[in-house]
Image 1 (cartoon, rainbow, N blue to C red):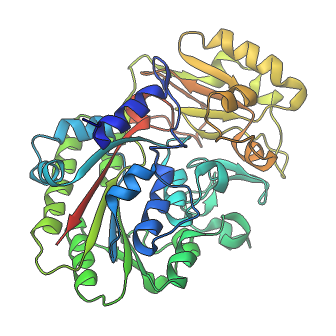
Image 2: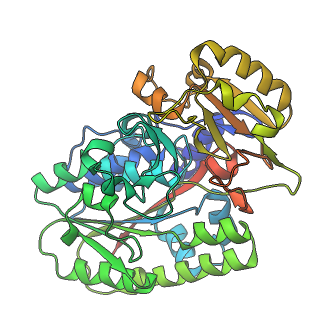
Length: 424
């Protein structure tokens, strides 16, 4: 008897475990980067985007409508905890196709939202975290709020004269779909839908902000019922990710938010009279808890590090790209070997310290040699904390107060669910 897609996908993800606490992205098969290709193939019958294995595409088949539920931070570990208690997940388990996938590297929302809206894998679009160094700006930026790293307010990049076209990668997926008569809608929390980032990928009239997730689900259903032509809708929610950061993944507060989201999603299954629609549910990453004694300030264990870093356009240090679970550094070329040796000694047992070549060999940077522009953004030295640890810059601009986080390569961060089911 041939293996099920869940068995095949889980075996594939197991093979991506390079060692304890280290999972590489399965870019060639069961990976989040394949979802845009699945969407395009399902709606149009063909795609040139990276996609999922042929067995998945054949099983999924063709549909007139696709709804992609982008459940921020709902990694495989969370899915397993709710799998037998949520009526919504039990229905998907019974009547749908459950697969295990990996996140991309880095396992961040910024990298994955950009993939979902551009159709490009993380190593292609090069958005590498909530904060990273952007050479076209010459400074560290936050792409999603479209701001400089040191600014809390949104759109400070716009105010400084930088347009999204100068900073953000273009979309391949959305123009492809629209050229073939597919209507597109993005639904998300009204606090940041629409935004400068979102409007770079779709006109404002295609972006719907909801006051509550239940309202967002209802808007998806209303659009489905009123849409005569083909359609693609992405329904994004960040509430679970936010509460996991604040209260910790697995906390009663975080579980209550996940339960509420899953309950609201039951509306999709209860709706009658829907056109032929494929439901896709997946996540950008999971989260992993910090140990109470596991927070390490990198500028304390290596006080000389700041003076060894490259400078931005204003002469300030480029501190890092990424975050406390994937602190990617930009040392000056002549200092790189010294920085690697010193950090390996200082962080022994708490973090892996990888050079650019080692990141590539581990499969973090994609199947081909990465372009120089990607390394310029990401950094040439990666500090990847082991489970329970985090490594951060102890400076007022960079916080480290979260109880759990993501961005790294642990199974808790990298393993995600991918579920397909026909609605209606």
